[in-house]
Length: 503
Image 1 (cartoon, rainbow, N blue to C red):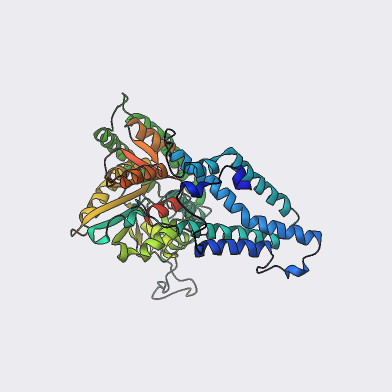
Image 2: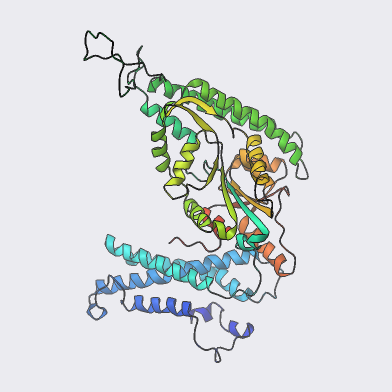
């Protein structure tokens, strides 16, 4: 009755489906409907015998569980309706699913979805913590079954996703690149490394080191007067006090922020360009590269990064918070690496490659190729020097091109680059598919000045799918001036590898 009121009735006739002749339902459909019936009947783990559900409170609890299983369907279909409607040409009236899409995208269906969610909230007020966990589990289970249902539907056309399957692996070599800081991580690694250095530094800075490194076999005089006081060699890597390091880092950070904004303003073109200006962007980012190298030189000179223990850096990397979905994507990609004929490269400004490698090691991703700067060490303790191999946008681009050049020459490279900063722009544009992760106003400001287009990935895929169905092969190539935007690693996963399900 609800669907008839919302205008869904009779769609099967328009689609050429005779329900009277249809036989057994799809197994995944049954799986979902059986789950709903079992939930409404109280026949699932963690609930007492349905025959014993008698009190008003127990009935309210069962109603909350049932709505917990039903609500995801309402919210998912309202979301899909709006998403699909936004991709339709308003002038197009002959689309076979237009009535279906308009119905789920309508304000009336949204109102029903909201009403269902509000009812679930009201019924859940009196539930205990454990009972709320049951509601959450049922909600996630329902969403999983819905995704499974949608994924099981037959596909009659060739599709542009998953990207890794568009061409036969034997015909192309898939090369995935990703930036690290704030693309893979939630926090910038430079600030983390500086903070570690400050925290482990001595609190004061007397004439001698407060915490000298004592060797296992200290040097003792040949004729000791006081053998209980052996001569301890001075720490070869002298440290500033934590207060001095904090002051130095605050000055460096503030100066970087101020000069970064000044540099961005200085590289903007004086006149608005009407077409994608790659040559002008390269010249601008050459000047930006000089700024980045000068900033790194100040960090080295300050001594902020002196005295960091390699094992301590690795432990910090293992605890580094990564973006949701990032590790899962790379794990699946590594798992299918041979099957997909793919390689993965992390290309980063990060000062310390050991931090990157340890960040991924806990997820079993030791096989990732890491290209970054490296710390110089003496006996596993950082000297404060940075071996700069990827210190600027131009360095990144050079590494990007060299990696592709050294790839398997038996087939064509198909490259994807994921990044989010101004320093990633040249690589994003050079890749066959450049994906901008998250929101970075500075990146968009610079890009727009050089007539770079930022297009949400999903609508772009819908457009390419239409072209694909009509017979035109979708073209993915670099240096078109178009970049694709996403807000999560789940979107990247779905685009490159297909269905992403982490619930």
